[in-house]
Each structure stands twice: as structure tokens, then as C-alpha cells.
Amino acid sequence: MLYAIVAHDRPDSLQDRLQARPDHLARLQALRDAGCLVLAGPLPAIDSPDPGEAGFTGSLVVAEFESIEAARAWADADPYQVAGVYTKVDVRPFKQVF
Image: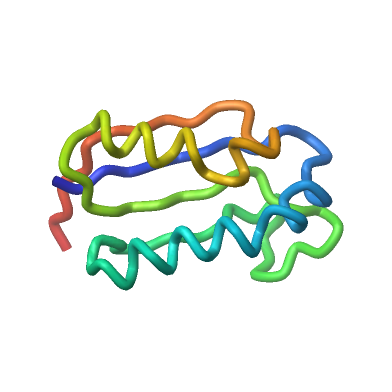
């Protein structure tokens, strides 16, 4: 089943986010290589594809997992979560229509 993982950044987390980014992207690439990733990306803090110093307010990942527990475990091990970038992570079942 698909799950939406919506993570919320803490204020002033840009430097920690940038430091953890290579490991974060490697995990997403592994999901993609396994054919499980539907989409993933950051949520810019301003209306711009490159927010610069404004940074980001969070991230969105939609991917296939065996269960909601597996999706939560994957989200809990995310390098951004480990680095304290995220203050809150919501994991919910997702039904793709289009």
C-alpha cells in the first residue's frame, strides 16, 4: 500500500538539513531503485523552487511499504529525523487516484 509521509522542519534547521541531505537522498534513491517511490521532495519556506536562506518547512514522501508500521519505521530512521531537523512526522495511508 502507498503511504504519505509528511515531515515538518523545526525553525532554523537549514544547516542541519544540508548536512544530513546526502544520507537522506541515498535512502530515497534506494526506495526508488526498489520501485517503491512515487514522489519525494522538500516544502520550500517561500514561493520559490530555490528558497535559499529561507530554507524549507518540511518534506513529503509518497512510497509503497508493506504496512503502516514499516512506513513509520522507515520515517523514524530518516537522517533528517535523526539529525533533529524534523519536529513532527505524520505517516498516513495514501490512495493514488491520478
